[in-house]
Structures are given as C-alpha cells and as structure tokens.
Length: 469
Image 1 (tube, helix red, strand yellow):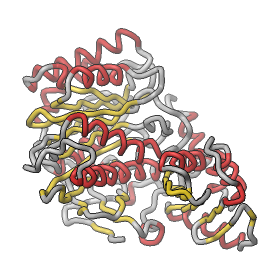
Image 2 (tube, helix red, strand yellow):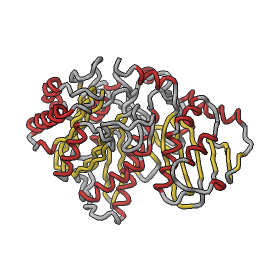
Image 3 (cartoon, helix red, strand yellow):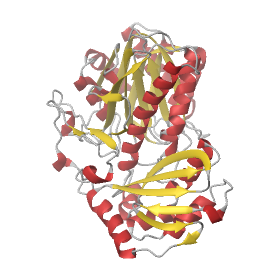
Image 4 (spheres, rainbow, N blue to C red):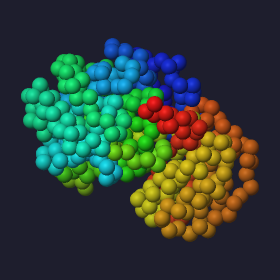
C-alpha cells in the first residue's frame, strides 16, 4: 500500500471526531492505495476533511480531481441557505460540456423521493444528460405532488440558465424525509452556483462537501488508466454515513468518465459496478427513499467507442468503474454513523459471485455481529449464524471462518484459538479506526464476493435518536 498526499492536499485531522483516526491505514488496509484530497482554494476542509479513499490495486493510477478529473466536466459547491443550521455548502452542481451518455441506479424503496422518480423518468426518455443538481438539507421524499413540482421547477430554472432542455438536468436530494426543498433559497442561488462552475480540483472538492449531511468526511476519488490503448479517466463523489443498506445502498453519488461508450453498454456496466460496490455496503439496515447514483460518460478521451460488453476494452473499463465505486463505497462504510471501525467480509467457495456476495452482505448486515465487533468480542458464532441465514445453501461441514489472521472454524468444526489475541485485534481496529477483516469459505465453488459494513456503537443510537431535534 502506498499512502499518497499531493502537494496541494490540506487536511485538518484535528477537525475529525475523535473516533476517526487515520493512523491505522498503514497496517489494516495494506492492499489498498489511499489518496485523500481536500480543497485549499475554497477551503472546503473548513467544514469537513476528505475521507481516506480505499481503491483496490489495479492497472490504474489514482489522481486528484474527483468528478472533474475526466475531460469535459465541471463542478461547484456553495452554501445556499438550505441547511437547518450552519453554513456548510449545501448545493452542488456537476455539468458536462457535451451531451454525455447517462445511466443511473436508484433506491428500491417504494416510498421513493420526488427527485428519484424524476430522474428515472428523465433517463427513460433520453440516453444523455448534461447536468446533475444536488441539494442537502431536505430529502423531498414523501412530499406528494407539491414535492414533485418543486423538482420540475428547479430543473427547469437551471436548464434555462445553462441553456439546456429541462430533461437534460438531473436532480438528487438528501436530508430530512418529509420536508420539501427550500425552493426559493435554491432558485435564488442557481446563478451564483453556475458562475462557480470549474474544472479544477477545488470545484470537485466543494461539490463533494456540499452533498454531505451527517457525514464526518467528504468522499471524492479519481483514477486514470488505459482502455484499448487510450488514456481515460473516471472520477466520482458520494455521500453517506447513516441509513446505509443494500438495495442501492443509502447514499448519493455522481460518477464521471471521458471514455466513449455505447448507451446500452454503459447502463449495464453501471449496474454491475453498483452491485459490486454500493449494493455491498451496510451500516444500519435501513434502505433510504433517496438512493441515487448517476453516471455520465462524455466520450472526450479520444478512445474508440466501446459497443460490446464482450470486448477487452469493456472488461478494462468495467474494472476501472468497479474500482472507483468500491473506493467510494468503502469510505461510506468507514464513515458509518457512530462507527469505530470498518468491517470487510470476504466470502469464497460459493457457486457464483452473486451467491458469495449475498452471504457477505448477510454477515456485514448482522446487528449481532456488528455489536460483537464493537464490544471487541470474537464471537464467531454470530458470523456463522449470519452466513447460514443468507438464503444460500451450502454444506455446513465445509464452513471456514477467520478473523484477521486467526482461524476460528474449519471444516465446520470450532477450533481452539487465542481469545485474548482475537479480542485485541478487534480492540486495535476500534482504537485506530482501522479495518476488521472477516474471511469465510463456504465450499469449493468459483464464486467470490465482498461486502463492507461497520461496527454498531452506542453513538449510532444517539446520533439518530436526535436527528431532527
């Protein structure tokens, strides 16, 4: 693992909550590169610092820039008066200079927020988009016809300023459910927000901060790699800390790339990447009303068009897209409300990737397993239990479980182990906000899967008990 901090990085670690320590990165995430970027020009770090972005190793280079790293994209973030208190930026905008191929993934919650309904209709009507407007403060969910009309008015107003068609503007919202957008504040802020648009790192960072709610860190990442012999870039930003659970995982995200890709291929790639990343994280078991990830491809890299999922270029781009989304997803789980550590569950030996992923999600989602990690209790029985009720049949006599480097069960049989050492492993991870690694094998099949969660602490209850008061 390499810990990279560029010369323009400015992170105030002292502003992190005491439970958020980066000191563990050297040992607990040894297989990942960490690149944390915070804006200096607009001092986005005055509000919250940047998260550690844990991108898997691969044939790519991590670069600064987030959503503006890819050619053709600009971003901005500003305070528009939508938050209930404070002056942290609460409006973000990402735009593309050309018609970008657009794809999205959204919450499966039946009580979907107005912007989710709007975006799904817009993407069904058009294969391209030019802008994504995001507000924090109000979720605009469970707000009826009036809330939907607010989305229409906001998208139309921004489209007029940008000289676009209304359907080319997509909307994401996050905040308190049941509250409509503070529309007048948003509308009056749009001219300034548009004027702040920039292709700089600062533009990307300010946008990443503006979309956060209870997050203690902002999440932004970008990579550069070769696809078909041409250099392409993929960037992204996301928010999420609580109400995180599979079925799109409760969060907002925007992904950008300058690769040239056919609409049907891009849509499939985005869904696969979401299933391998955001759908594999869980904090508390609550699937939100506002989950939305929008992915835009400008095609400005000069690469050949990817028109088939079966091509080597498609495989290369899929791997890059997976890496960016997984990096963001892990940072969301790392920042789980009240959490003291990240939990990473790897499952092998399943019949397929989907089966392994489901078992991994089941363990990462277990409240009992999460509570045991917080209590520094190596209670592997809770892990075995959660794997068993995942709904994936396997031979219990082939179950193998490890906690870090400690083997707890093999061949379905419990093994003697150093309980004090295992407990100390959990304690160290909690004290340094590190990673607890759980490895599970359920057979001899080819399927591998991974999921991420966090421990369940007393602070989680306090944070969410007082959310609106």
